[in-house]
Amino acid sequence: MKPDYQELVDEISALLGVPATLEGRDFGLIAFGVHDGLGDESALDPVRTRTILARSSSAQVRAWFEGFGIARATGPVRIPPAPEAGVLRGRICLPARSREVVQGYVWLLESDPGPTQAQLAAAMRVAERIGALLAEEASAEDAVSREFRRVLESGGPGREREIALTALESALGPDAGDFHTVLCVTPWTEEEPPSVRRVPGTAAACAAPLTGGPQMLALLVRVRTGTEVPASVLTAAARLAPGSAAGVGGPRRGAREAGVLWDQALAAARAASAEPRLGPVARWSAIGPYRLLTRLPAGVTAEDTALGELLAHAELARTVEVYLDHAGQAGRTAAALGIHRQTLYYRLSRVEQLTGLDLDDGEHRLLLHMGVKAARL
Image (tube, rainbow, N blue to C red; front, top):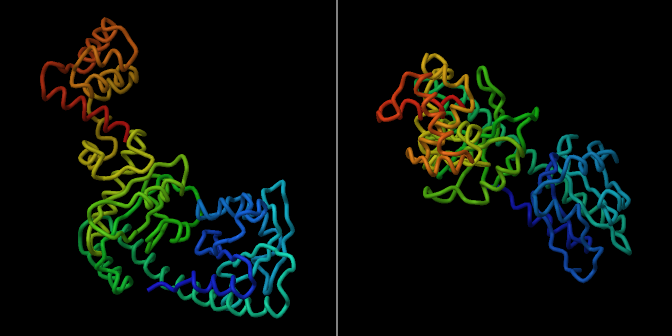
């Protein structure tokens, strides 16, 4: 069971008489105290509000605060207000350390009168307890993430994946039998994966480079039931990498399903990349034909002479895809493309000439439909 950081944050708030906020060393929100001064417009400032609502601080805010040496501090650090940066009230930062390493930060809004040295010393002792718990938890999370990465690198069903799944079960301990899902974000441009707290229920996070492709982020997430992935998880995942595509598998019961869930999440993320309407976080259950198309080897469409010729003409490929998406209904297709029907008929005749396929033949239509969609993967 994870430590109750909220109780420790409330203890600091009670000691000092001001609301405290706890963030990890990556500035992801862990717990926060409720402020009762709602009538005071200066009680909250934009930075604190955003941190609570988005569960993390922006890169600019992080750089501002780190500029005061909080990552090296061994005691309280006072930070003055900076209205131009959205920091309307001064802060006191209590570093939560363990073995000379900062594991997180406790943030306090400055008050008048401010806390006494004795109060700050007492709060620092609580911050040290928080640091020890964060370090212990991070060690356990690192073990789970390490075994999860081995599952991803195992390359599919087989003995190597079975060994990795057994090790993952062991690392998860009592939680191994819970319902889980896997999230995939691609591309992932950061050097390190985010804190597991960035997405609710995350048990493991790792960057997973795909052979011949971009680096991806993979998250193993516990969920309450096997019916659907919670909206809170999807929302948090969408915030991880704006502009990237993400996919989610499952959910399924038991850590031994992690390999299958990864395959599903990767397929869904690829589908979201090819078809933005499926995103920003595509569910495996909702990607339709891409559940099969993503299993095709990369570049397979280019190897088909007929399809390769068509794909060299982007406008024609798009036209026939929209036509087949609309079940061959010319009126709806022309409206969707914003062209005249005669223009549509001309383009479709060109498709038949280039490919040697007959759009009145069901199997030929299926080949074309699969081909143009698979090409965008």
